[in-house]
Image (cartoon, rainbow, N blue to C red; front, side, top):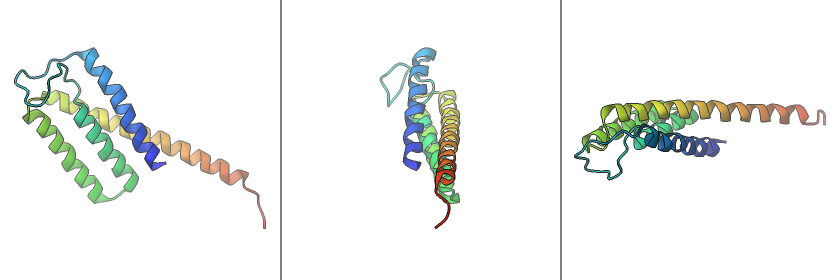
Amino acid sequence: WDAANIAIAIALVVAIGAPMSYIVARVRPGDSLAESTATSFPSGHTAVATTVAVTLGLLLRRWYVWALGVLWVLWMMWARTYLHAHWLSDVIAGLLEGIAVATLVWWAVDTVRERRAERSASAAPVGP
């Protein structure tokens, strides 16, 4: 279930963010050191990093996973703006997209897992 959670979350965040960048069609900063494609909103790197960090935090439930995740996402946001690959609003949008996708996928997968476990428990034979 955990592997499915991560795979679905990453696939969904990319499936949402990539078309959104073409729909919004926001131009990157002119002096970008990292990217050659024209569109920048939202930051896909930040969205995927946030999705992975939040998903791992929700699955593993350890304070250090959350702390490392926060540091990784903040570093990603800083790096993408430092390299002029994105505007500040692009990385903030990527952060929010990643949080939303990770939490919704985690909730959906956890709900399905619990319902399947309940069905298995109720279908199991009772007695010796």
